[in-house]
Image (cartoon, one colour):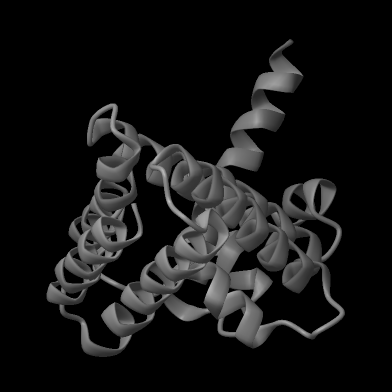
Length: 190
């Protein structure tokens, strides 16, 4: 039991340090030595859990996928029971992300840009987008959209655009503008 707790804490420290570093500096901008230093684990400990940087990147992206989708869903749920309000309210997750640590963009867009087309990291980013879009399509259908898939694609583009523009401009107003556009879009589609 003690070994499992130690193992879990080590993995958590490594992933937390990697997430912070990858988010700010990008996948290519961070070396394993930086992750080791930031996590405070021995090199051998990191390599016991992650044999390669690619494995570490994949674990980071999977963890980020779970966390980010949960944040979007939580913000949507906080907007109320009406799916139309939820489609707009999910943008509050972007505002909360900005308030926590500024805009460094979307980790999935960053990973897709940096990763090789045939890499696991790229595959994880594509799967993240598919899962997000499936959820947005379900929400759009519940909102009574005439074409739920189209509304979901438009909302997805607003999310990606707000995260990208937020990174470039470092201005949280882009999230409010995306949310306002989503409100008009939802009203016109439902």
